[in-house]
Image 1 (tube, rainbow, N blue to C red):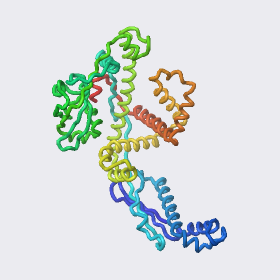
Image 2 (image 1 turned 120 degrees about the horizontal axis):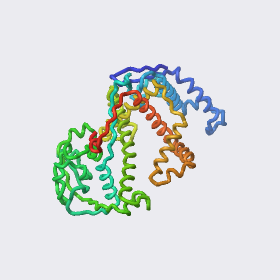
Image 3 (image 1 turned 90 degrees about the vertical axis):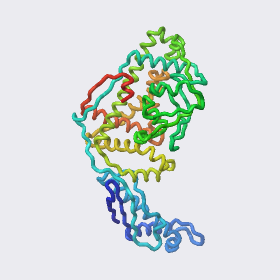
Image 4 (image 1 turned 45 degrees about the vertical axis):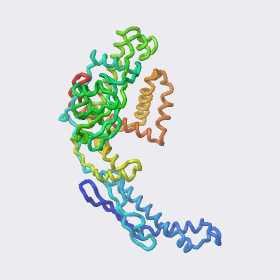
Amino acid sequence: MDITFDKTEKTQGVIKISVNKADFQPGVDQKIKEYSKTANIKGFRKGKVPEGMIRKMYGNALIVEEINKLVSDKLNSYLKESDTQFLGEPLPVQKDEEFDWENQESFLFEYEIGFAEPFEVKVDKKVKLDKHFIKVDDKVIDETIENLQRQFGEMENPEVSSEKDTLYGQIKSKDGEIDQEISIDLRDVEKASLKKLVGIKNGTEVDIDPKKSFKHDNVLKSQLRIDDEEFKKLKKLTFTLKAVNHHKLAPVNQELFDKTFGQGTIKDEAGFRDRVKEIVSQNYKGESEQFFDHQVREKLTESAKINLPDEFLKKWLIRTNDNITPELMELEYTSYAKELKWSLIRNQIVKNQEIKVEHEDVIAEAKELIKKQFAGSGIGNQMDDQLDTFANNYLQGENGENYMKVFNQVQSQKVLDHIKSEVTVKEKTVSLDEFRKL
């Protein structure tokens, strides 16, 4: 029984496994003996069925079963023991009906497979990154308070749109590739385009330049479910208004203080602003850290220059996932490829730096996740005596998937912490508007 790997392209190849009669016949013969001792066949006492009859009745099925087991074991062992970084899972080239199981004495099984070429990850002081901190000034506090006023205010549906309204409607491209409902928060629209969208009624059609109309491109990208490359190809779109949502702001008074932070917690507007500033500062610190982690991943993923077997991976994902269509794959593949590249980089750093994740690390992270989940309810600090139970129940759920999810989160953070300790980081303080444009 032999196994070989032939590269057919830069990052793709074929695994070939040859199986001869001498490989599978002993196992088949053994199973026939076992069947003859246990089979219940009319006309024969149990354990007295002739082996020839068993072979005639079950021979082909036993041959298929034995060969499949041998091939599966050999393939799995090869994938685990090989120094090649295989990606995805092997896809069989042949179909079972192509074999003559009854008469053939030798079989050749071929599997398509993708792999990643060796790559280098440079993590040193030559890698330079900017870390941005958001300045929490009066403008940020005013904007946050206005959001709270909108949240606790009343919703109206006027006939005519005005600034700061949210518009709902249909957006279409000329070629018909885009035709779906979206929402447009007029606070996210650039001034030059805002004039077109203010003072309009239901049914009004407005031409929109997707690249110039919005302060933040990601808002439109996420609704249209397109990536950066597809966004660059977009031309003018037509938006047809269907409905207008207008937020009547709640007044800044004791009722707003109580709804936001609890009955009697805040006594006056000055205390309200101070508390808002404290919470916003905490949130933006977390947001800055998350964005910096994202920058680290992007920087290393780009510099590592990892070539992926894109066509193989697309084929594998479509074939093994019933819910993924070729059209959906084209939309989602860029994000999948980025995540896969980061996974390869992370694994290499874990191996080279001997980074370990202990069970205690996973438990501690699970506890933090649970505390954050309950923080908004006001009981986060009152449940310390139950945290162990909650954490263990969560980690044991979903057949171990929750445990591996938290394990990977801890591992990723340890890798990121290592990277950040090795590269050159320059800290910068920016306004909220500047941060949003990064």
